[in-house]
Image 1 (cartoon, rainbow, N blue to C red):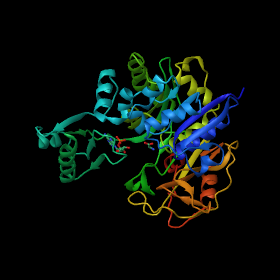
Image 2 (tube, rainbow, N blue to C red):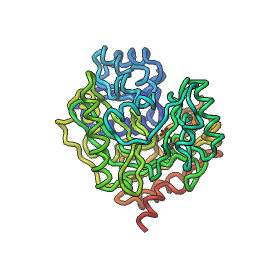
Image 3 (cartoon, helix red, strand yellow):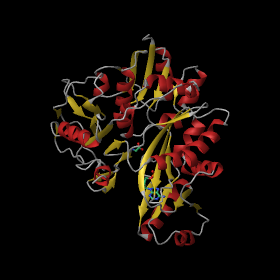
Image 4 (cartoon, rainbow, N blue to C red):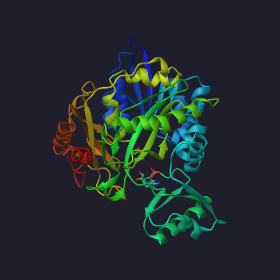
Length: 427
Ligand code: AMP
Ligand code: GLY
């Protein structure tokens, strides 16, 4: 029976994908999204509460009598939104504040990984009393990896072969934050595994691969993600099982033993060397963006059921099924992204949204809105992404690119090689 009301917090491509997937559920009556974007506006009710306004979000969830709140971004989780929703007796998909620090503090994540004996890069914590040169010597011969211990929106990590650059970022970070991490450089190929977990169990979604650099061939500045595909063949069945045995199961054992278990999705950023023994590069406490857009379509089971059960510690009672298809998404980024994206430009050619058509190719809106005349305009750096799902990655890639070349936005750019690692690995 369609009797449930859901509130999705956030306004990017990830939240558009969450709304699309839950819209398919026969159990969902109404979806609200805040702040949403032009894509969500076409089939759910958008609100103007910011995703970082915890008080406003609680009031909104209460006023619409939400049966479930699904939190897209990490910031409100780090501010305690899940804790406040628990006080208000509203189920929340997303962990409590203490556990959101797995993303909010890299040092906290490292300490949990040590406690749970999970493989990750070796590291030094440096502060104003540390011998910085000795620490740099310790990891010399490979690039240095310096990580700030704060939520820095993707700008908190420097990977460099220049000792002077590493030293400068260390000093700058100690000055602003009091301490900083210097990490051993890990060699291998990266992949993302999204693990839905609660106190009762966990479900690993098919692994994906994001393309974080702005330009083709993995060159140029780091971005939030320029495109992704799923499943990622670098995560073979053996790598997947090793990841479960050495990372996911120990993390779940640790987290489910706490007074409030982890209820949400744990994004496990993996580095997979030739040996196939994965290490954790990072944890995020939310779906990846754009990984969410290409992972949810591969979930055959009801996504609303999955997220609601997780918020209520009932995950182990579900049997989650997946499609055997392949999905890919290609991000259309604004001129100047990632440094200084130009906003407010008209977007042409975007097809009308058909939420029940999670097959073929479709547009996931991200930074989109309307001008005063109701025209579709860009409002962010990552404007939208073209997503396709097909029986093979080759076909899905062809469909996503056919769609993106039919759109126009002045000055926009996109990568032409999304999925190249998987496609060339097969040749
Ligand atoms: P993070 O914010 O921790 O995910 O780091 C951002 C990016 O820096 C990652 O996606 C990797 O490409 C790279 N990176 C982070 N840590 C390491 C490491 N220990 N070794 C190699 N590359 C890393
Ligand atoms: N696409 C990487 C992230 O969401 O962090």
